Image (cartoon, rainbow, N blue to C red; front, side, top):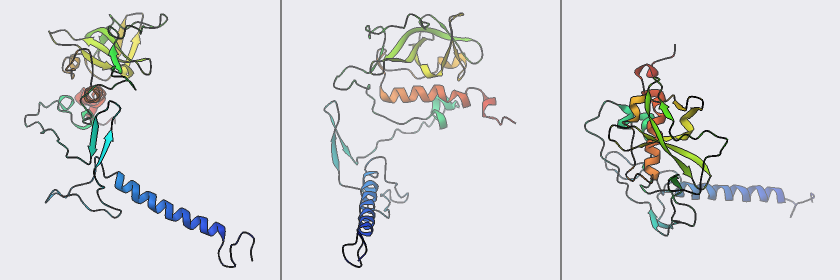
Length: 245
């Protein structure tokens, strides 16, 4: 009998390998069922029914308890918004391609274990301040990719959980509400008191998505705002959509 063998024909290592295969097959079946619970499955065009797959089908309905105490049941019917029948011709506004975004919950992101909004303007998050050695963006001019002024930074929105700046609140004038600009797309010129923006032109700040509440931003609004400004790298000017060569 070989060393490590239970009998003359069964090896422990061989049994372990077979057990792993069985476990891994079961894991695949489980995951293929779970990934069809939300955002899945694909639907057949003729009748709109879910398509069958090789490994399993749609799992039974399951109710999840969210951190705020509310519940969400999946799978559930999705209610997609009706596409615009009157496109503006501006893909940044029409949310086309890189300007599109996921339809997350239209509620603010909350702090863990608290109902306090995770992202808030510094005028409300009074326990936050700009580091004395860093440039304070408030009052700086926002310069678009065309070199013109798109607005003035009126406030700074901070992430209370990560203790960093998420958005700059830009007053675009013209009687409109202010718009939020992602901090990650901004460059600073402290000497000239300017925020340099390369993704969009100055005039495109006025057409950016705005928040329903001037003192809070929802998850869905965050995605729309980020998609709008980031898509400017392709859509801000017609020449950006052309080949480099």
